[in-house]
Image (tube, rainbow, N blue to C red; front, side, top):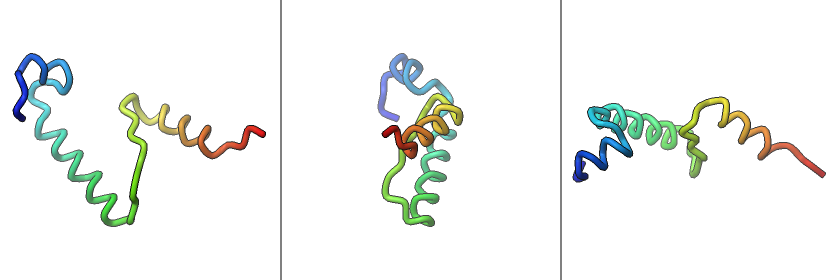
Length: 61
């Protein structure tokens, strides 16, 4: 990564480069195998993703 180490530590964390690259490859593979064009990525966790899905599919009329 071409980023100052203090900025990288703040935004990504030091020593997480391989983990992040592996995660990107996994998501890319899922997209390619399932023909998904887009997704919402929630960095807070599964609970927030379930809440987003619930409110996006629920009719409030």
